[in-house]
Image (cartoon, rainbow, N blue to C red; front, top):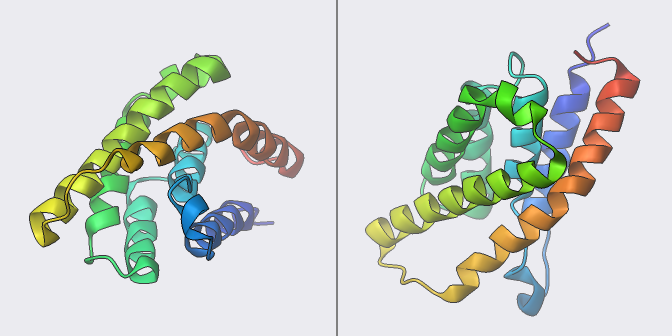
Length: 157
């Protein structure tokens, strides 16, 4: 029986969480759900979640958010490429060490997004761009433990 639907369901939920309406005061703290889910599955199952899936999810996210096509795709592909290069090392780190590295990957993701938006539409830097990095890092342990429990119960390997 094909159990890949768990991966696709978690990606779908992450996409929904990316676009769900929030009040403006809280929206600037929205974590990068799709990035979290893709990095987890890439570390856990690199043969199933790879650059192609990251690119496709990025295109879908661009369409859902109304960004220029390819903006999130490029950022996600760069981050997933880096995490797939070092997935064996990342697996062996504790969750707290993974939080630090995920913070760097999230900062890179947001930097690429900002740089491309600035280049395409003259968006200027604001310090509120740092909040998604902080919330993403602090959500990592809980998401990691939830997805790991689901992966082990489903017998994905």
